[in-house]
Length: 66
Image (cartoon, one colour):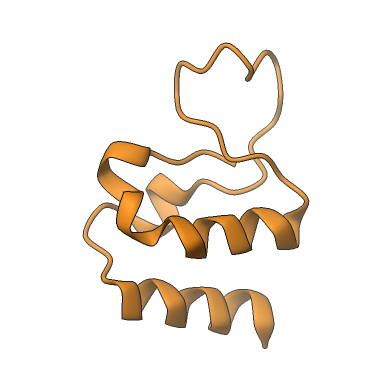
């Protein structure tokens, strides 16, 4: 799972929920742990950098819980 901690740190709990549902590991670009792993979810693209806690929670609920 791709994310950017610097820009998305406020929605980390929501990102961890997504990672848990997808059985994915959240990693930032440039992490030495990435290797040739595929991206299960791109939080930078899907959630962007301007999500509020409420909007991010709604996104997770609508997309992963319902």
